[in-house]
Image (tube, rainbow, N blue to C red; front, side, top):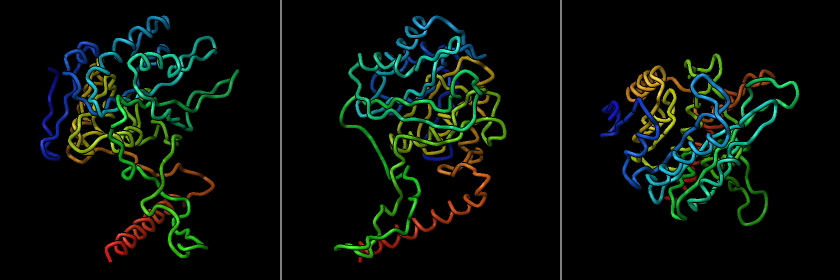
Length: 309
């Protein structure tokens, strides 16, 4: 089935990338085996990689895929469905609201409605320009994998300490960083982005990586039914997970294979996770970011040393 890439980058991890029908591929997968399903399906807005249909038809097609995804999801697994808006004659329909009843039908539990905010996109003239999309994160049960520490972001004030009470002089924040919350400011992949390929709407690796690191453990299987140019499989391989995906367009499929191989070899070029957005009024902030990471690492080491003392 499809083309299998054996990964020598880490112990026995691998990727399976299939060029063909998404529904056929998903239907062939066994029950309850996938730890994380993360994808961004077409938005039915007439992009080059999709055929625009009536919303009712789009809903039915999405329902078929989602039904099968729920079937193959592990009992302690997660589904992350990342979507934007359907737009017609200047009127928008939020696709996460449209599709929510499908997940609700399966009694999945919505853990977060994550807002992905970005700075670039089409400019509107009769409404405010759209600069966000949403990720619906569902689990099957109340027992599910969630690892916060790998995705913590730098504290705003890493040296802040308690100034009164029994903990006076001790650090008042988590030395490993803070919870990234449910609003993520991550640049989308536009021109001059280090990850840019020919795909007009590709996933940034950092966005997928945050989901993979928090919702899976090493060697877990991550699946993307609308793989595109392979950001999900590349992010999975980069972090010692098994990446599986399918893509109908041969040109995108070929790029996905190339990116998977680069991830295995450690040569995949990506935007560093948690790198701050460039501010022309504060060009030194990247250096400040690195300094903050060093401070938090130092604080964490001191905290661990103190605990072991």
